[in-house]
Amino acid sequence: MSSAPKFGLRIALWYATLFVAGSIAIVLLTYYLTAMSLEQRDRQILDSKLGEYTAAYARGGIDGLADTVRAEQRTAPERLFVRVVSRRSEALVLSNTDGWNPSTLETAQLRLPDGTLVQVGKSSDARDDLLARFRAVLGIVTLTMVVIALSGGWLATQSAAYPIRRLTQAVRRIIRTGRTDQRVPVAGTPGSNDALDELTTLFNAMLDKIEGLVAAMRGALDNVSHDLRTPLTRLRGTAEMALAAPPDIERYREALADCVEEADRVLVMLNTLMDISEAESGAMQLQREPVRLAEVVDRAVDLYREVAEAKGVSLHVSRPPASAASPASSAASGASRTPPEDVVVDGDRTRLEQVAANLIDNAVKYTPAGGRVDVHVRRDGDRAVLEVRDTGAGITPDEVSRIWDRLFRGDTSRAERGLGLGLSLVKAIVEAHGGTVGVTSEPGRGSTFTVLLPLG
Ligand code: ADP
Image (cartoon, rainbow, N blue to C red; front, side, top):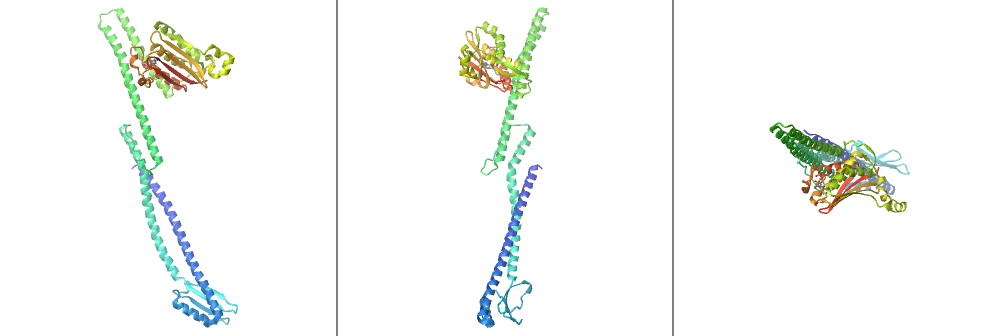
């Protein structure tokens, strides 16, 4: 049995206990107040009769009183006991006390100035009888309330625990089947439990997220196996062909060189994938130190200068205009005009060089002869900016969101060398440094990649 029903029972018992305790308190208070007010009423009757009788006695003596009592007892519904004791202790009983229970007789008395004592008594039997009936009724009411409280509490907690049970069932189903496409329906009805609805919604959102991650991992694995197959098949083919041909040391040398090249390609791919995963999961060890971004850019540009020249693409590192460095204008235009030498970030030099190199590599690669690549370092508020702008092919809007995916290669880039991992690595490294990277691109006119890093 799951713990949900036990949980429900516990809440039901708590609820019922509180309810019953509250009800009993109210019933007892009601009874007490009723008994008090009935007793008070009887006392008031006695007091007012006593006043009336003493007045009658004062007016007409014992005969006058006797007349009054007799006249009253003919019409009054309640019989009263009346006694007058004279100064000489002669008791004159004016009303019959036969059958009166002295233990339930309540009296009031008054001594007149002449020493005469007037006593009025009233039996509490009627009141006791009324209260006894009232007690019986209250007993039944209390019992009914206990039953209602228990069943009401049970029903209420059952319905409150219902979403929890559904959630539990869903989790159990997912654990049993390993399928994450199950969702827990959100009740969302008016008066339903908002907190549980929210939990259910969050739970479903978590499942969406997990499903997305699993799908992405599966996709990445599919891509990796697909992308590994090509170089490995080529490697195998090269070796096989060399073996099948007549022995020739020169052919073997060539074949082995090809094999080394293919194996390198596979290794680079696997290493890059590992790097991306490490950077994304936060496991990448960054050797942080103060790094001048301009130095990083210079080294990366040096790597690609020859490639660009050979291709006929002009490669520029643009610096802020010379006037900007002069004291007057730098004071006027603030921090954003600081010379690039002073743009320092706290980061891993080698990794940041990888970022710059990958962006410059892409810019040169995807820019045809006659084009231009600009690399720009600047400061923007409390952030360092690295911008790589090209006048190349650009990226179509439907590809723009996918270029950061692992192993994604644009349709038009198939002719170029590449693994489709460069930008994924750039993004992973930049984000591991607490920065962001973005792109704006116009197909046919060029692209601008912008890296923002917190200043060191
Ligand atoms: P690769 O360059 O190895 O294909 P990347 O991850 O570096 O992989 O880039 C992914 C895709 O993004 C490329 O295949 C290309 O279609 C597109 N891309 C990247 N940089 C540029 C650029 N500067 N100009 C045009 N397209 C680009």
